[in-house]
Image 1 (cartoon, helix red, strand yellow):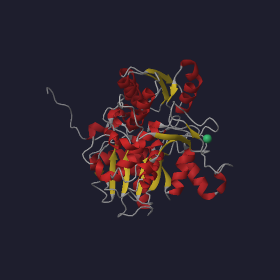
Image 2: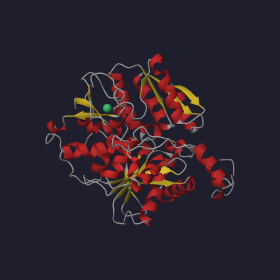
Image 3: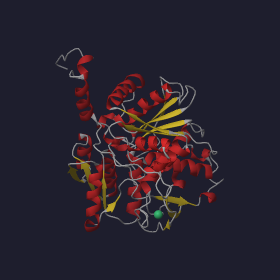
Image 4: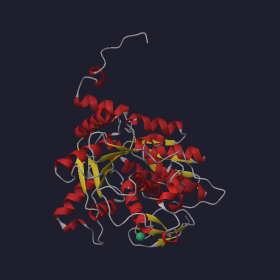
Length: 416
Ligand SMILES: [Zn+2]
């Protein structure tokens, strides 16, 4: 629907959506898109959605309205399967690996690139830990726009290769995503790039919030008791939380909320650290009353999407954890690798390392009694393992010298 205004999540300032915007000019706060949902109340009902297109654009009324002569830039993203776990009666796997470009990043880029084109922008730039770059490159290609992507040089091979094939301009950086972000910031004005970095423009959140709408729709409009979300930049969690508030405003759900769980890799867990510190001391919140996290030094994990040493929206993530009575938990690379193999062999889901971290977190939270067997909990698999074959193999070699395939395949016999 028509956007009323953009709202700063720090100071509440209203900005116009008539032109492209990045962040609040006063305090750098993340901007949220606000609509007049009250005018939609009663006119759009959950049952109206049945039979609509199986993509996130089925929720068009709660996404930015386009002029009649403009169409969304879509590759069929969203409305991914909600799979009941075969192992745990209360658990579901929301499989985002089935999106175009193999990860949940497609959702945010579909809406962000749609709006960038609407604003007449030509050149988009972003730092990426891997999958956001691939998604940006694909949607920019579909929109006929330029993509400039800065990625750490050791991202999974698939991310480098897909960006190349989608025709993006790729710069491989000897550093982490924070370094890549600095390079985009330094060059964007001179190069006339629009910065579509995580939470530095308002529409990736709009795309990702549709995961919240899908969780509700696919569970018959009854939210689960918990949602476990692998958190790098945290946009998925931030977007879902926004969606829940919108759905309550529309009268689709009540005031109940799932416990929101952040899972990070033990080798890069700034949100977990800030959450733990905040529980034991009140000093974690800044003078403005906002939570924050510290830059994580020496970030390392093979779950490339979780190598985010400081999330731009950390204050929003920590606020959600608190308001939802959730928690933050870390999983080691060994636990993540074991969870990948377990999920693949038990559920038939070959999850990205970040996604498998959700299983490791769920197992810990069941063992600690945080979740009970009867609680419905949605575990997000944020991407497909097929994009990580090289990093998975390297990780396997670290933990076991013998190649994994040799254990099950009794030798190779030719000809085929
Ligand atoms: Zn502000």
